[in-house]
Length: 224
Image (cartoon, rainbow, N blue to C red; front, top):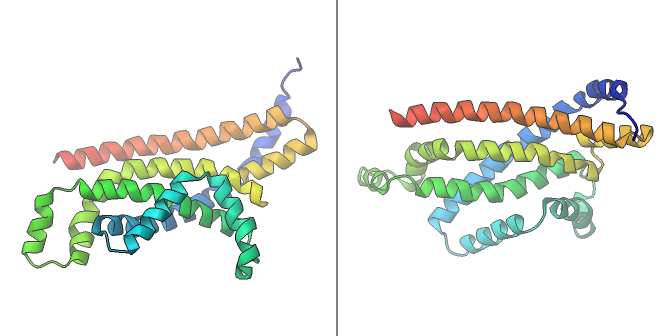
């Protein structure tokens, strides 16, 4: 059993850290897009618009029921064969779109549950004063639902950051892609993947701490 090459591991840390902005950037872009799409999907699921509701249910079922890696491959390698307009898409864009579609399906169900959790009397009171459905959602329902769903959505963001590691399968050199290249050149696979695992762990721990702080603030606000 050989000893760990500590010097190699320490030298690898700044190399992988150089790709953290790309990893976080992809996750942030996908999170914003997924959140917007999830809100639309959730509102539709509550409103249950005929025909559209069946399409939304199919969308959610598909993206919740198939692996993210399969979805990324289907979108990046498969769709360009039948839709040539997608042939020029790069790996980063494909990864962001894939993450957006995948996580929006999960987030939509969380937001829908939060919307339905708002007391029914507030719906009735808002309608009684003449608010339209759009005003009701924007001013009353969604702000309250957001407070309830926020901790869960932060969890999805954490999962999204970890899921960006699949982007290297599309040729994207992010944290995992850079580690794979470094390991292939040095043959020190254990050390390389241990370093990237520790860096992912550190990022997740920071976000988990922020999540706990957010939950504490929201609990205080709801208790007032």
